Length: 302
Figure: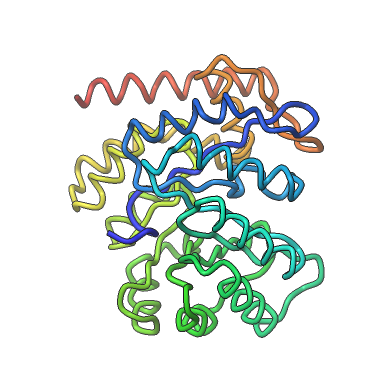
């Protein structure tokens, strides 16, 4: 198993209303992931609010996470930012703090060309000198990695995998065959978009980069293991148990739903940073109902 394979859990970054890390609560979240046995932790991904945090707060978060995990679970750190020099600095800091790998999205304001993205990733990979995963997230970056660009980047030293969005046509198998025909053996290809996890893993994807596993690692791990072992019946049953949550993720955004889940599970009082607003009370009731349904379904499958 490589760093960018299996179940990678992406936790929230709990902060107070001034954007300052709440290290004790984050340590609590990370301890849950470690005890569950996830394959890696994806710190400071989109779920982890990386785009809303200052470089100093991001550095503090990495150091606190390294201390909390104590080397028990591999740590992948998101380092995306607008400027290449800033990303290089974040990559070096993550490496020095003890991270095991990096995740990079091509954050931009000006629309980037493929050559600009290539040079950006090449520079960051050289600066961090850790295994780096391409974060193909057109929903937030408005940049789509072509298969040719992924293939080209896969030849760059330290670039070892890609985190893909769900294919619009649902053809995971076809996309995997195409990408693997153009990338080196061992180059990891995984997917985000939790409601597509079952199908991506059953098709042979290397990793599930999971939002929900950041708070519910045990049922997510059961789904990941069933699908990765091609137990279609069990994977389908578990995926259906998550169905109400997947519906809420699609309707309101997984980011907002995760904050509501955190406050239900931990009885905490954290909110996303403005301008993002927490879910309305009626939607929070739906999140509670979805959580109850998941627990009941998982219990019935035991």
